[in-house]
Image 1 (cartoon, rainbow, N blue to C red):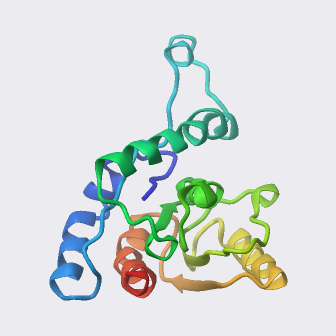
Image 2 (cartoon, rainbow, N blue to C red; image 1 turned 180 degrees about the vertical axis):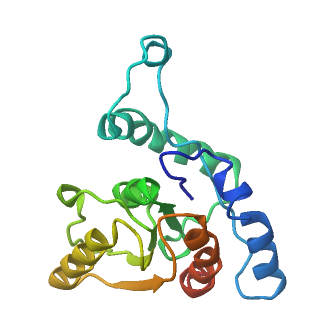
Image 3 (cartoon, rainbow, N blue to C red; image 1 turned 180 degrees about the horizontal axis):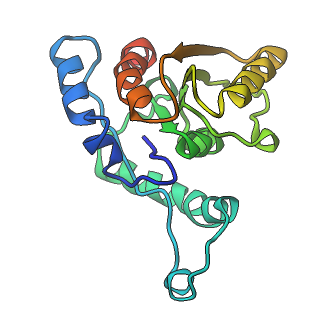
Length: 193
């Protein structure tokens, strides 16, 4: 579960109350017990910090976190009883973290990709493949990236790739992301268990 570019590994805990949300859904038998990993998704080198270099998002993500992701997955799989069944795995993120989720869906070997207020690059849209995940997309009616989300949905239609798109009240902030997390978990993750 990825955070956005201005967040960190604790963003979902602090702002999205992920612990309370998941516990209440499990207690209500809405979902099976799950393991959620929330890594810190953006890294800057000491050299970047020392020289005050602002690394472009593309370089930051592609070069560092996305290259490190397979090792992270291996460590998580070695440490926790992670489901090996494709149908019981998901990857999700908000804002630029949604873009990472989209880019890393194949590496994560998952059946559901959650994109909350996604900030996407058209050159990185997925291509159809044998095991196509379901894309679960939610964005605010007032989100500045709403037009790009609509474009992505049209692309998925053209490619005949399965998705669900939800528009909710709000903008590009936690007033959208926090309330849609339990809906995402109940709607698609609950079904995969």
